[in-house]
Amino acid sequence: MQATLETVATMADDLPVKPNQDLDHLPGPPGHWLTGNARNLLPNLGPFVREQQAVHGNCFTVGLFRNTRVVMMVGPQANEMILLDKDNNFSSRLGWEVLLELFGRNVLVRDFADHKQHRRLMTHVFKPGTLSGYLNQMNPIIAGSLSDYEGVVDVYARTKQMALEIAVEVFAGIQSGPEIEVWNRDLNLVLSNAMAHKIRLPGTRYSRCLRARDRLRKRLSNELCNRRKAGGGDLFSQLATQQNENGEMLSDSDVIDHMFGMLFAAHDTTASSLAMIFWLLAHHNEWQEKLRVECELLHARGGSNQLTYDSLDQLSQVDWVFKEALRLYSPLQLIPRRSVHAFEFEGLKIPENTALYLVPQAVHFDPKYYSNPDQFDPSRFAASNTENRNNDPFAFIPFGRGSHMCLGMHFAYMEIKAVVYQTLLSRRLEPASPEALELEYLPIVRPTTSMAIRFSTL
Image (cartoon, rainbow, N blue to C red; front, top):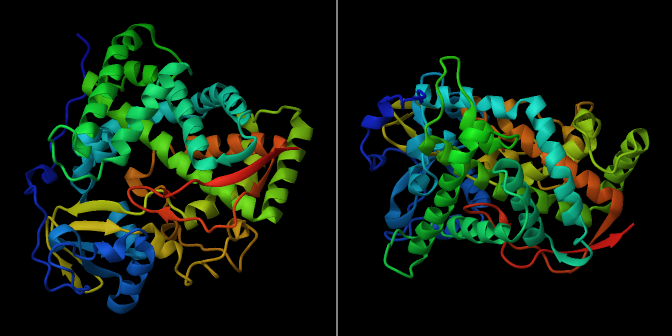
């Protein structure tokens, strides 16, 4: 019988389920007894967090439901301390515990030595040679999807569908067709209700969410046995057959948990970023034209309508636009952790078992690191731009950093570039409505209404 990875116990496993509330010694705004500071944090927590940072400094508490206090830590120094976590003091599993029931023990919610062994095994499925194969798989899907980008398009809905098709086919090895709609329905049910109150009565949002989760896991489970035997080029098959240096494999439940987490990450965060890029290019025609020229020059040299892996580095300006979109609209607005031991930060003592949150937007809009931070300026990410370029690696954290940095980061860059390349070679983007874009920022950045953009054939 094939040996499987055993879960490694960590000190975080011994912490109480409920976070520490002995935080009265820390600064922070008072909150309503029931809603805490939720009205200030929704729909966009960034401005309120930055206001409190100006008043209280880089570490303060805010109140959530029933005014349960959590600690916000902002700025590059806080990001570096928490994300590098040199002393194994900040639990990701307990930080994300609210989602553990839905997404299982995927690599995001594993800690320390346990996380390290899973990440080492999974890194192989994102190596350059493997990524090149993924790009060959996704290019035809992109081409087929773009045929529907004509006239006025709800770009978030359409892009979300394309991202799902890519994730399900490239990651899960399931061909596009009627089954995609079933996956899309259940993935949306889980994500849109993940933050609902945990009332399990029939008909409630959370009950529907759990049933959708069970259907998704059952589909993955039914496929797993075939992947163990037959293998294949998709990520699911590689996870099912990958072995570490000791000949150990992931257990069935581990494969399904990791697949579940990556399907959601590849599906929703990519759709959020790509939709925002389309929106920004439609409203900043000068940058749309710069990127189109860059894509046309590459096309003239290579002669292909579909991007190749070897040419990814030649789209430097597309890279700048993606980074600027991530700076302005990081898909994940909060990075949660739980302290295992008490620690100090900027003279403040934070107890063990404290719920902590990093806020990427707080530093992404800090004028100390980004001049004119409210302005869309992709050139700030050019290597030659010494005046308007931030040099602190922990002042830009859309993918996190340290041991928990997003495993699929290079996949995301590749997918975004492949879509933008094909789009700008064939389509012009223009605003379809004078109305301002309204967004909700939690649990992920997305529009509250239709995100209308006009696409016309070049």
